[in-house]
Amino acid sequence: MVLHYLIDHITIVFFLLVSAVVVLSRSKGRAKHHKKAKAKLKIAVDSQMNEPMTMHPDIDTSLCIGCGACTTACPEGDILQLINHKAVLVTPTKCVGHGECEVVCPMGAIDLVFGTKTRGMDIPRVSTNYETNVPGMYIAGELGGMGLIRNAVKQGVMAADHALSNLPNAKADTDILIVGAGPAGIAAGMNAVAKKKNYMVIEQNAFGGTIYSFPRQKLVMSHPFNLPIVGLAKFPQHEVSKEELLSYFDKVRKQAGLKVQEKTRFENIEKKGDIFVVKTNKGDITARKVILSMGVRGSPRKLGVPGEDKPKVTYNLIDPEQYQKKNIVVVGGGNAGAEVTQMLADKRWGNKVHQLVRTGTFDRCNEDNQNRLRTLEKEVGLNIWFNSGVVSIHDDYVEIKKENEVVKVPNDFIFVMAGAELPHKFLSSVGIKIEKKFGEGLAKAK
Ligand SMILES: Cc1cc2nc3c(=O)[nH]c(=O)nc-3n(C[C@H](O)[C@H](O)[C@H](O)COP(=O)(O)OP(=O)(O)OC[C@H]3O[C@@H](n4cnc5c(N)ncnc54)[C@H](O)[C@@H]3O)c2cc1C
Image (spheres, helix red, strand yellow):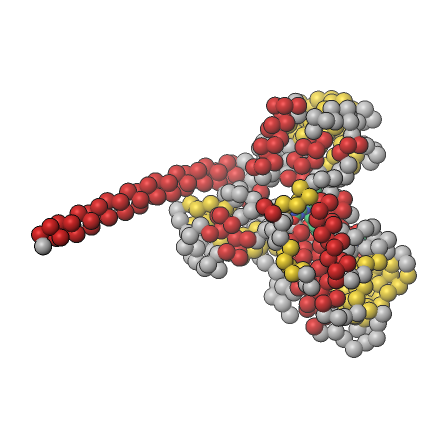
C-alpha cells in the first residue's frame, strides 16, 4: 500500500518535471523566435521596406490567438512571424499575395487587403465576384491587381460563375466573351464549357498567357488550383517547369474541348443596351457578358532613362541560350529579376552579368533565389550591386549609379525586370473606375 502510494507520487513528480522541462524549452524556443522576428521587422522598418507591394494579409490583433498557423502556411517562407504572441508581417515587401494565411487562420483574424493606411494602391474597381462598375463587364487575373497563377484561375472561375448566372435576354453572338487565354481566361472558358454556355475566348498571341513567355525551363511555383471539368491540378513540391505547365494546360484544353481563337486582338468595347460590342482585329463580336483577363504584361514598368528605346533593352527573357559571351545588365531585385539573372549567369553561356538592386538588400526575393545568386557570385563572378540603378543606356555601354558614384559598364543587353503597371489609360477608356485602396479588400459583391 505504502509502496503503491510512493510509486504514484514519484510518477506524478516525474511527470511534472518532464512537463516543466518541455514548457521551459518551448518558451525558450519561442523567445528566440520572437527575438529573430523583431530583428527582421526592425530591418524592414529601418530600410523603409515595411510597405507591402501587393495584396497582403491584414491581421486583426484582437482576434489573433498567436497559434502560428499562418506563419507556417506561407509558401514564401518567414514573411509572417509571431511577435508577442501575435502574427506580424515582418518582411512585407516579400509578400506576393498567395493568401494561404487567410485560409488557415482558425480565428478569421486575417483579411487580404490592398495598400496600407499610409500608401494607397491603385486597382480597378471590382466587387468580390469580380464585376466592375460597368455592369456585365468583369476583370479576372493579374489585370485586377493580384499576381500568381492560382489567384488568376480562382478569379476566372468566380467571374464566369457570376457572369453566367444572370444573363440578359438580348440577342448576341455569344453569352460570354473572354479576352486573353492566360490562366484566368482558361479557367473562365473551362467554366463556360462546364456550364454548357455559348462562349468565345480570344487571344492576341498564343494559348497559355504569360506562362508562354516565361524563360525556357523556368521552374514555376504554383500551389494547387481547381479547374472546372478536370478538378485539382497539383504539382510535386508545388513546382513545375514552364514546358510541363503549358503541356498540362494543353491537355486540359483538349480534354474539355475548350476553343480559343488565337491571333485575335481585342481593340475596344462599347455597351449598346444590354449587350457589348467588342471590336477585334478580326471584326466585331457581340456578347452578353465580357471578362477581361488580359494580364498586365502589355505594360511593363519602364526605367524612364535616356536610351531605353534601344532594341537591346528588353522586358522578358525566353531563351537564355541566345545570349552567350555577352555583357548583360539585369535590373530588378525581385524573384523575376533573380531568376533571369540565374539563367543568364549560368556558366555554360560565359556571360558577364551585373544584377542591379535598387535597395540595400534583397527585400523582394525569396531565400532560395537569394542563395542561388550568392552561389553564382562565388562560382562565376556574378556582380550583384545593391543601391544601384541605370542612369543612361548607350550602344555598347551603360552608365550605372552605384551608391554615390556613376560608373560606365560595357554592355550588350539590358533586361528590365521591374514588374508591370496597371494599364490605367486602357481601363479608363472602357469605363472602368480605378480606386486607391488604403488597406482595404474588394468591395462587397452586388
Ligand atoms: C517572369 C515571371 C515569373 C513568374 N513566375 C510565377 C510563378 O512562379 N508562379 C506564379 O504563380 N506566378 C508567376 N508569375 C505571375 C503569373 O505569370 C501571372 O500572375 C499569371 O500568368 C496571370 O494570369 P492572367 O491570366 O491574369 O494573365 P496572363 O497570364 O498575363 O494572360 C493574359 C493574356 O491576355 C492576352 N491579351 C492581352 N491583351 C490582349 C488583347 N488586347 N487582345 C487579346 N488578348 C490579349 C495576352 O496575350 C495573354 O496571353 C510570374 C510572372 C512573371 C512575369
